[in-house]
Amino acid sequence: MPPLFILASLLWIPPQSPTASANFERDLSECLAIKSDTLDRMTRAEPWKLPEELVQPASQSESGVQAMSRLFLAGADAIPFLCAHLKDPRPTQLVVVPTLHILAEVSAFYDEYGFHQSLKQLEKLEEMGSLPKPFRVPCGDLCFWLLGEITNRRFSPNQQMAQIARISAPSLFPQLADRASREWGHCSKETLYRSLARDLESPDMMYRDSGALKRLLALYPGRAVDCLLVRISEPLVSGILEADVEDRLRHRNTLDPYQLQILLKEMESVPDARLDAAAVRLLAKIQRSPKLMDAAEDDLISMLKRRAAASTSKKQD
Image 1: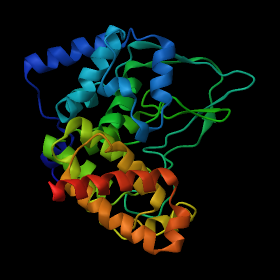
Image 2: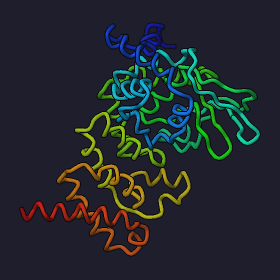
Image 3: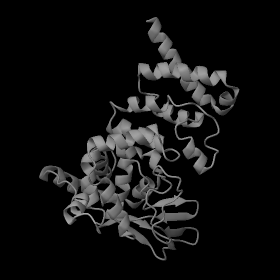
Image 4: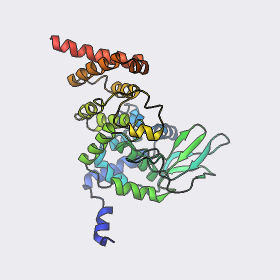
């Protein structure tokens, strides 16, 4: 068994400056006042979609939403603070209420449907059960969700699919907080960047790459294109999205036309000559393959043509 000081060092979270910690504490306190319907909408969104309020909140947004955006945009700097508050019992305004039409299901899924370089479909830490009464989401569970938004992980204390509200929360399963702290508590800016880059370049689940690209654009805008160029240099293969889980994982270093469309859609407003040149190559490859042409939607072809035209125009200039 490793010496106790080694175990302690693995659980130790680096201290923050008093000023940064005070600012984060003030922002988190403001988050507790965010209206229930706003929190409900934001926390239900699929992780790869990244609520717009986190990146660029409207000027008329609630002060709590503005505060949550500041925590998100702090990126790796906010992670130790969030990890330290994963068991914070203070109540938020968000209440999950089981009804005759909505079953509230509690589970200890950690990063649900994330496969972590393996072929496991789910890592199930506890038995699932139902929630018989209204559940007020505490501050720690909100921090768990926000940590997932920063790190591109599916930490979902309020996910609803069809008629089931799925609650995976540290307040119900403390081991979720412990594992998240172990995995992310020591995260530096460079560590977070490498994790997001890996998610984009070699995703371990569907849409992990597009979720990573959104976060790279928000937190590391000057480095996002470099990672995307690695991803779109992978071989184009159609039909990956229709494959089963294990087959998709075996094809993780290939790219489906639909995946390519989602990634390029994020970059439409980002001018970059390297992306324009890549579009020329991708368009030619798709047009030479009847199978890829069948799989490619009109929006993708249009995007590639616009990028390719920009590349041609720059060469003529």
